[in-house]
Each structure stands twice: as structure tokens, then as C-alpha cells.
Image (tube, rainbow, N blue to C red):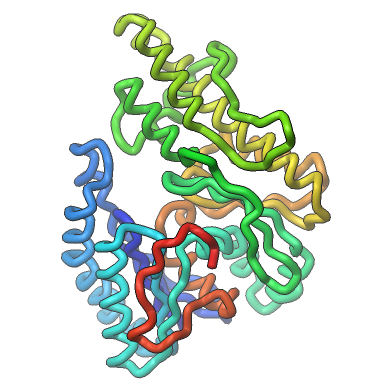
Length: 343
């Protein structure tokens, strides 16, 4: 049984993973309501909230008698906000010392990379090894507020970054676009909601696609294009065309993601396509990527909604499924990892 802790940003999360069963518990305390008034995450407040909310979550598991069977602890050690990561690391180290169990450091992005496979395991835990072998090599797309990248998992379960964003992440572009349009935080879900009633072809926003076949992403030009358009329109026009603006802006992000992913998929002998990260909850994006996978007759693995954002379930699963990718150093060496790579 693996107990996992995730405190990389503004969610305090715990999870218990049993290889013979799957995820037995997933607890999350969200700080969205707190940070909404500031229009984004305030690091000092986020750190304080982790310190306040982690002990009660652990107490809930203790009262349920779930912690007695823990044989290892996994914790996110980067990337993320340094103060937030420090709270999770300190708690994980203390528990590992007290219980005399191994401590595993998991890269947050590795957690996202493996999250689409959680449902595969849950469907038939005893047959997971055989099922995952048929899904590798795998091409995955991580789309979140801080990262947008394509990666691969080979038959040896080794992860490699194929391409990333040159500037803004897709989730950041959506959040900042929402701010330009006068919407709240987090912006991505609000844009998605308004886009349902809008026309995705109402405005022609740039897709940031390089003509030379480069697989890297770019969203800064899209954001700038929206800013210039909003400056030209009156407040009344923005209000009247808000649904169309949201739909067109969101479609530009999705088109860029889908086209790059399709190009990458066509270049390798991949057995499956995955989608994960906070923006992976977007319904239109899931539909677009499912179509990309379907064109090549490949299975589409999308992270379940509760494992798209920051969550401890994916950290526990990655620690079990990909132990070679975990930091297994002594406690003094297991420190915050700020890099954005999958290592």
C-alpha cells in the first residue's frame, strides 16, 4: 500500500494505492475559492493552506484505519511552488521516519504522464502488466497551466520529452485569455463554458504552427492577438460577442494541440495516445484528441476527470508503475526538484 502526498501548487491531496485493487482513497482540499479573489495563485497563501489542511486529511485516513497497511510513501518533489513542495516533503519525510518505510520522490509531470493508465489498471488489476505492454510505445500530451508537452513511453517504460512549448503553456494562455475577456479564475473552465454557446469560426486567431514541421508549441502570439482584438472592440461589443470570442480562442488552442499531436503520432509506431494535465478535462479537447487517435486506429487514453488536476492518485500510481523514475536517495538528498523535465 502506497500513501502519496501532493502539494505542488494550490491543492492539498492524499491518496492510497493498493496494487491489487487500485486507488482506495483520494482526498483533495482545493484552494480555488481562496485564490479566486486575487485572480491567480498566491504562493504564500497556498503554502499556509497546505500547512493548515494536510494534518486534518491525514487524520481522516488515520481514523478510517487506512494507514496501518502503508508500506511506502510517495511525495511530489517538483516541479511546483517551492514553499508548497516543502510542506509535502517535510510531512512525507517525517512519516517515513516514524513508520520506517521507504520514501519515493515523484516528479509531478511523471504523475501526469502515467495518469491515463490508472483506469487501465483499475479495470483489471491482475492483468495490468499484459494490458500495458499492448499499449506501448505510447505518445502522450500533457496540457496544464504550467506545462504543455509531448512525450513518449517506450516498451521499457522509459519516458522521454518529444517537444514542449516555446513560451506560454496552453492552460496559461486560456487563463490569461479569460482575464483579458473579464472572466474570473480559473479561466480555462469559464472559457469552455461560454464557448459552448459560441461559434468557433467567428474569429480567426493564430494557431502558432511553424511551417517547418517543428513539433514545439507556442501560445504567446495567440494571447497577444486576443489582447489587440479586445482593445479594438468596445466594452459593449466584447460583452455581446463574448461567447464567440471564447469559442474561437479556445478552438485556436485546441487546433494547435491537435495538429502537433497528429504530426507526432504519424512519425512513430505508437500503440496508443494519451491526454493528461489540468486542461485535459476540457471536453472539446478530449473530443479532438480522440479523433486524432481514431484516425490511426489507436486506443485513446484520457486521464479521468479527478486525476486531471493536481492530485495524489497519480503520484501514488507513478511510484508503483514507474519505480525506476522515482528518487530513492536518503532523506537528506530527497529535495525539491524545480526542473520541468520528466526526470
